[in-house]
Length: 227
Image 1 (cartoon, rainbow, N blue to C red):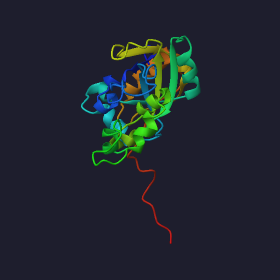
Image 2: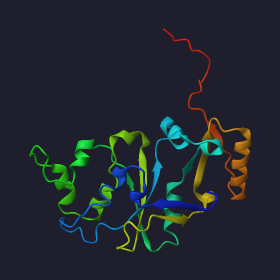
Image 3: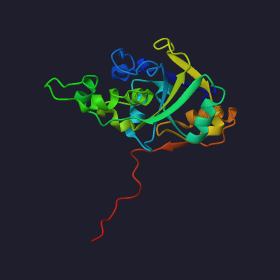
Image 4: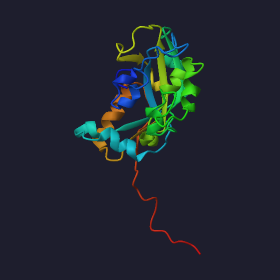
């Protein structure tokens, strides 16, 4: 936010190796794959309004101010408009992550038959009549262990077909003041840390006042259950 940019990365830069399983796969045996497996840069968001796991995950093993998390809510329409403006060398795609497949299905998705000899209908659904949409669908497959993330992904596809694995990341310019809707901080954020954040926001022309999210707070006094 301090740099008026947002980072998109290639899927093989993520910690979860499954994220690059189909990104780095060979599609040489797939009809129509030529030209439909381009390099992509991705940025992930969540459509979960409240997620306890996210607060813990992004602060895990960090100390000091690095252990403080900030959750921002954006105007998607404004974000999409900004991210394509001035980036004519890229195409933008948006998709919801698919958590419906179990590990066994993901592990054998590239095979026509399962180890027991049964036909793999999922393979045919994706790899017969293969096109760019099929490829991007694979980029949205994620294991059920991460379903709590409720992820939404944006892909920027460059007009550079032979650069897969070399791009790593790219910073795209955004005017945060024009796309931010809400800003929420860790409930453990101190008044001093809050003041520091407000100062950064004001320096960027952002008038939103951050608020704390109290995950574990009781909403009121002990209740009486009515008969």
